[in-house]
Image: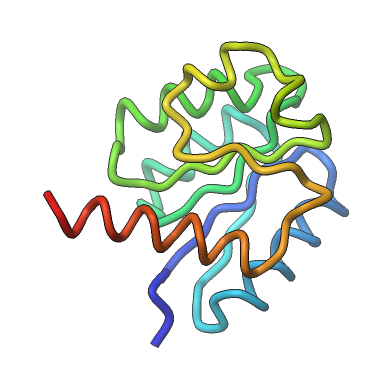
Length: 129
């Protein structure tokens, strides 16, 4: 059984949402994947679906991933939020590191192993509480 039951993939680009869906399905085969095309839609979907994980693009029109992550972590702190960006994490604005995301992942390095490692760290933290 997959450790993750549900994932929300958030990106303004349909092709990237599709790629995130494929990545999640390859990582956690039984996870249910939903999608959102904006930060605003992501916040609404999180309130509705209560996902285990959100893969959040950093740069989107309107409410971007950083602001959406802050809101999601405030309303549902138990959801694991992973910022994903085509920009190297070291080159992102400081706000990306301060928005309470659980991890920042470079899109070019997104692999099932990376998702599993972040999930394992998250599970270890929540088990010790």
